[in-house]
Image 1 (tube, helix red, strand yellow):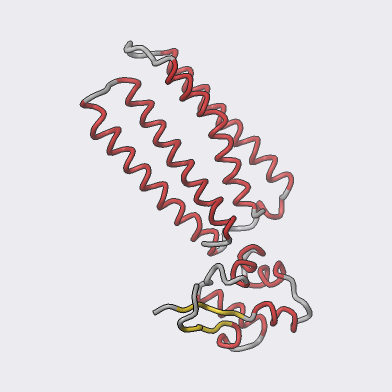
Image 2: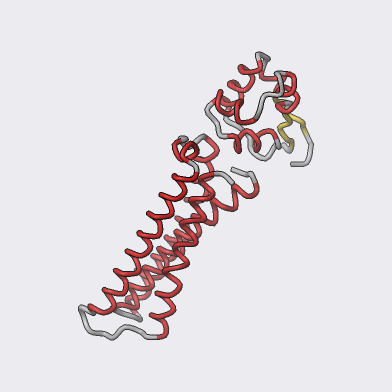
Amino acid sequence: MSGVIRNKIRTLRFLNGEMSQAELGQRIGLTRQTVAAIEAGKYAPSLEAAFRIADVFGVPLAEVFEWERGAPN
Amino acid sequence: MPYREKVAWLSLLSMLAVFIPYFSWTALHPPGPEIPNFGQMALYAVTSLSWAALLGIGHLLLRWRAPGEAKLPMDERDIAIAHKARGYAYGVLIAGMIGVGGMMPFTHGGWEIANAAFFMIVLAEAVFSIGIIRAYRRQHA
């Protein structure tokens, strides 16, 4: 089944006081480059990292990530 | 540039800097059949020690320039990138060892086999570094 994981990390960072990628990474134990890769949709994080990201923003996981069925990778 | 990409560049470039001259010299001046061949052994020892010295100095410089980054543990993407690159390198190493250990003894001997094995090890290490660099460049895991 083809599809792609979309995320709203950029928007959520903006809504949380323009949090930097480095700060988000520091709070969840990832490097700034990894946060950038996740945000750009180039890297799919582990389930644990995804939950940690949602926890930092205080929102459910589904508000950060969504599966877009049939979308090209 | 991520710290681990810099380390991969260091490994790749230092390897090319010392092993290209070694293998070029060896190809142009094939070692004789005498065993032990102290001249060839000394050349290989100097090459390996030079690589180790370059790596050591390079690591110190990288740590000195970015002490914070150097201390950071690998995160899940760093581990995934290293794992994938190691897979490519393992394939190269296995193919090389089949050729060197399983086929060359029937047609070659002595330093030819040893140097072919060294070459495949260096090639596998280069593939590992290239795999890491490529993944960080493309932001993939």
